[in-house]
Length: 624
Image (cartoon, rainbow, N blue to C red; front, side, top):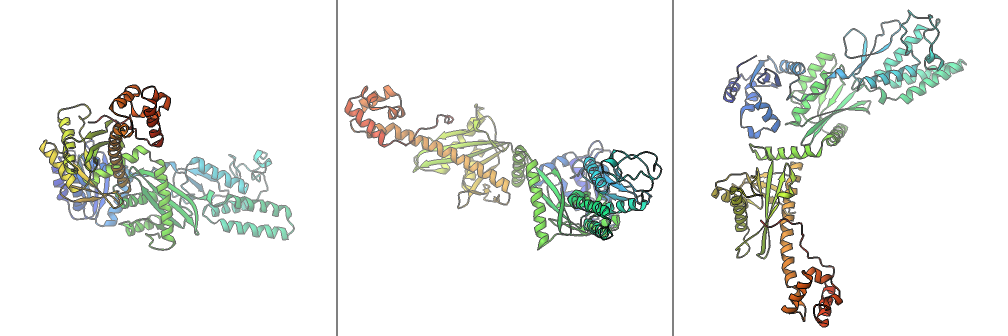
């Protein structure tokens, strides 16, 4: 292991000096702890990628690279040797930045040694290769104990601490015998052959031979009935019913019985889920799943998790169906064959039932990932996806979005909407009423708004002191150019993007000032976030614009009433303060201020307009 700290340039230089050979690389931090293990077909090409432009890396990769103090490589003779070494080193070091499944210590096995005269079932933590039969791993000691108790009751096997044949005939049968839960194997005269036959049936069930056991018991029951051994036939019938009630699902052993395993994987912006559906004779028996951190690559996640899953368990199916291509599938199949002396076929189905099964496995994984992920984690992951998409160096904390609203060049207003950590921060919203605009000029309006906003930022004015990490302008490339020009004039530089809409008025892409577009429709979470920002910005702008129009209309509405001139208008406003209050007054109240004929005219006017609501919201923030 290297001990001397290396600079980033030294790490980069070392990576470029590596051979174009297969091998394994171990990234280490200052304490010499291995934080990541990877495999490469060509070490130089793969390792060098970590020390290129960090803007293309995800947050997880950037954090890992920032902690690399030095790294070692092990050159392998073949890709297969590199694969074996990678799996071994990941299991040994459990690196922080590798995707890891839970340690298999928590998944016990059932052990049955049929070489003994009286075989017994026992729970053990791992397989030791001592010649006994092992079944599992199961979901936990509690599940395993329940399964073992169920099998004992089904076959009336002993659950006591007596050891046979040592304790035969030494004591009277225990309570289990009297409760008809055990056939009293501790008594003298019981057949060891019958005991072994029942244990053989237990083994068959654990191997998935449910139908074989049922057929054997049915045949024995019919033979006993024909021989007029009705009591024995009744006991066999009860055992058969118990086995049928037991069913296959209670005997699933995380792949021991499976003929086909179907792998599913899905991730949202925060977490991923790896699922395995176990099938026997076309019937779904059970599902395993594991929640992991979202990966930079679905293909890498599936490949890594599949390797850990099957190398940490003492069982493999005949066939493994994958949702995506696994680069070294053939090599891994070879490793499984050497490990378990069993040929395994690994493939990505292209048609038929296989495609349907993979779809089901992916759906299960998606539901689990969604269920376990908090709303805050989703938002954070979406913002990180956006940062990666835009190749921004710094995290995006504060986003500001701007829009202009006007009608034929009148009442021109603008909105500034703020999102912090992917959430609307309404206390930071600002609205602007444009000044000295001769007519409709979106670009001139945007220039004025941004100039006012960032001039106040430079002055440190309250409410404008925070700087944005990303500026979004409702419009195309010219809007983005206008914003960049304003920032340049003020000596500022922030990432600026225009929000380009489709024919349904939805933001379909972000555009830079140089005209290059970044599509967002292939990333649903990012598409939804940008759409939310665009809609909120437009809503806030149009609401302010309408409130101004309504205010103007209400200021002049009294002028539309016959018999109400400036004197009577002033008297009404002095008494009732607002047009809204005048509208709500009855005729008698109005007649106390102006003549009865005029009061009647005012009352009837507003009666005709009843139902209109032109009040501006009193909760709108003040104009900036």
